[in-house]
Image (cartoon, rainbow, N blue to C red):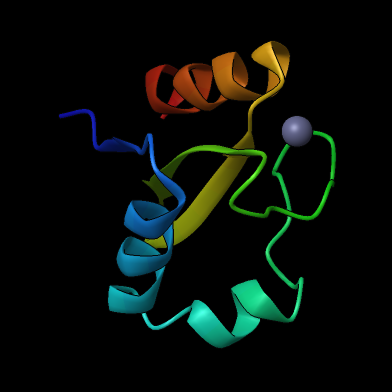
Length: 75
Ligand SMILES: [Zn+2]
């Protein structure tokens, strides 16, 4: 089953990331886009999913976000 989280509001993103226990890392700029390596912020966050128990983040660039979907399919 696909488990992709998408948020529209920055408060929603921070709340979600906080619940994952990643808020400190997020604020410290340690969360990176899986595809382009950009630091994920509330401004460029697009989606996240789980891959092999690991959380994978994608920024809002279309190719990054789309490649998150292909992760799921190739699993
Ligand atoms: Zn990216």
